[in-house]
Length: 389
Image 1 (cartoon, rainbow, N blue to C red):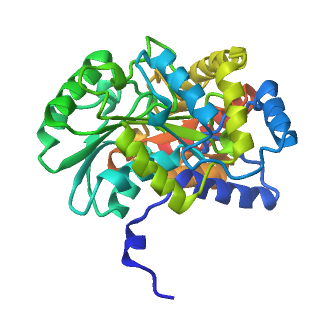
Image 2 (cartoon, rainbow, N blue to C red):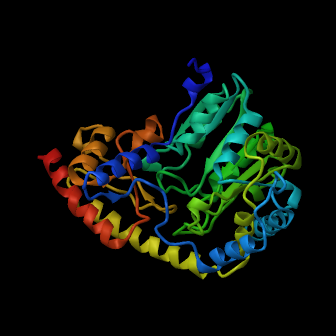
């Protein structure tokens, strides 16, 4: 079978590859602590599951509009207006099976062959993958530890060019846990507005912010008709398997997104969408409890990692990942990640899986129990002791 050349340009997400390897080891009888996958270990709140059951019983099992059910788009518009402080019309909302389609569709709709797209590196690997797939030119902005993994704004200004068709932001950020400050976002917004460059702002970790106030680029001057806001239900409501996400964007782009939905997924499952209304409008105490617990786990794992030989770990301000520096070991991140999985039974990701500037780091998710985090720390120590010996 001959494959189209474009398939050579499409990457993958290493978390699922490592998860598959870890599951294979478990089938062989190995005990594995899973710190590789970005998935809350909490169950979906009961009131959300009850809403889905009620929707199923009421017959919400048929096709719906490709852009999303009207009542769901209205609920999302109201939620974004309330949480971001901007006016939002339901016509600006497109509901998708998970948030990834918003990334995919935005890049396909705005980035053509030879066009440039600016994105954070290390960053979520799908950004670079789909830019390449669309025939665009990925333009990375290095996120460095000494700046708290924030944008190098001077370099950002240098790399913005007449060919720049999209800027991608992610704050709080995967994989570093870094957060862009208000002054940084304001400067990015000013440049984007002046040059009329659309911005895809990935705000899936908005609720997982442990210090300071959340800042969205959507509210800055000139950004109302340039911003594509990406959010979803997987992280905040522990609904990863439900596959429910959405984008908020200018109406002309929403119309193109809807065409892409027609051509790919047809629509998002109706009963899942109705459960989403319950998530947005129902009791948020489970969300607050989960975030509070993740803050506590963050402190535990950062303290434990910093006690390992040859490793240092900054305290992340958001998301639920740590990004420890392992350059003192003199080994590549890929080699260490492999050894931790095969020798210690701890599944982590190599920082290089998130781009070239992630080399020298590992990504660990602390969306796991305290007992498992402590077990992982105990298991990792002999590996790092040997590497530092």
